[in-house]
Image: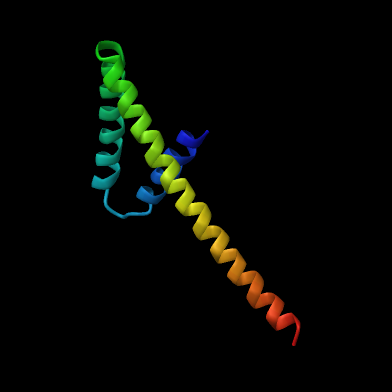
Length: 87
């Protein structure tokens, strides 16, 4: 599910650009990564495992940053609402 959400979110962000080249580059990059990781998994499973673990660590890192940002944002909104409600 995380992979799908990441891919669809990236695709939605790329689709907002008016020029088609970023979409082509993104699609080509996805294809190269999928084929390359599949090849590595068949021919060099240890290297593929290392790459997959590194990608997972990067995803978890950025997910934690996003969660932290959203929590901070909502806590500021909640604080602003509670201070204006008490007036």
